[in-house]
Each structure stands twice: as structure tokens, then as C-alpha cells.
Image 1 (cartoon, rainbow, N blue to C red):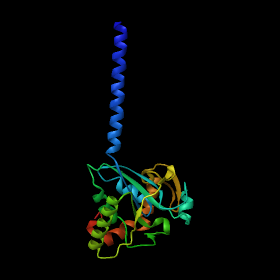
Image 2 (cartoon, rainbow, N blue to C red):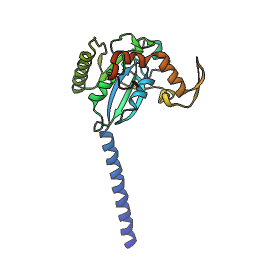
Image 3 (cartoon, helix red, strand yellow):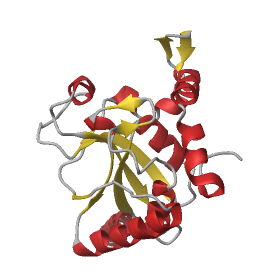
Image 4 (tube, helix red, strand yellow):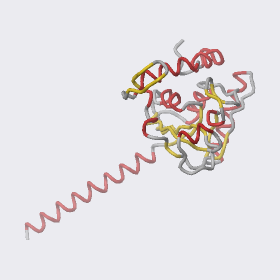
Length: 220
């Protein structure tokens, strides 16, 4: 009988542990929100926002179009309607959606309707994707504030969120990848290739010229 009681106690203890783990996972999930934006090359947007305290991770992908399960080649070729975009997954108790939107506008050229920096075409346009009226209202208010601060018309649209398709594995965390790839500068590690690309594309120069000291990801 004592053995049976011991087994029951162990079983109860295991159930308590499992219950606590499941509850912890639910709380963790509940503590994560998602902001989906398009800001040109998703390598750059991922690199920028993964440096923000309170951001858990940034995932590169495609959204805004009608093609299901698009590939990088399809999206950059055009015709899918998709943007190169990212999901910024963040802890709202550490960084607010409003703060991230404020940084987003100041990390791109929101006056450019034809793409971003050296990357041209529909897939490289800027956009903010919202899931409900509260997110839309906040995005519109932040856009208006950014436009007033810049003194120029901002063309970044605020769009209803749709399916988000994660980009191919080699695009994720490209900016810190160690795989050697062939570039116009010769064979380079992904991290070095990314730095060369970003510099050649003029992203930071353009953002700094536009936003000055307000640009959050440019070293002044």
C-alpha cells in the first residue's frame, strides 16, 4: 500500500510540473506581440531590430500579396504582390509597439514609393501591416507624427495583415551568418557580404541624411 501511495505521489508531482510548464509556455506566448513591417531588404530590417532591447527575435519573410508559399526568386521578380517583410516579435513590457513604429519610420526612407535605397521594385517598398483597429489607429498616429517631424509626405501604406510566409532558411539571420557565399567582391562570409552590401546600397547614408540624429540604427 505504501508503494502505491508513493507512486500516486510521484504521479501527482509530475502532473504538477507538467501543468506548470504548460502554464509557463502560455504566459510566455501571451507576453510576446508581433509587429509586421516592410522596410526594403529584410536582412537589414532584421539586423536593425534584433539589436533593440525587448525584441525577442525578428523573422524574415513575405506578405501582402496573393501567391501562396512564395519563393525569394518569385517575390523579387515581381508580380506576386508580396513585400520583403519581417515579423518583429517583442516583449511589450520592455518595448512598446509605438516605440518600434517610431524607430521603423526613422530607419527607412518612407518618402520613396519605388523601393528602398538601391533596391527597386514592388517587393522593396515600405509598409506597415495591422491586425485590428487599435493597431491601425496607432500606426496612423505614429505615421502622422513622423511626417510632421520630417516635414515631407510619407508614402508608407498601412495595410491589413494577411498570411506571412517565412523566407528560406538561408535568409534568416543572414547578417551574422558564417557560410561563405560568392559576391561581386569575391568569396565572403555572409556576415561580411551583408556589411559590404549594406554599405554599397547606401542605406545608412540615406537614412542619416533624411533623419539626422533621429535615425536609431546609424552611428553618428
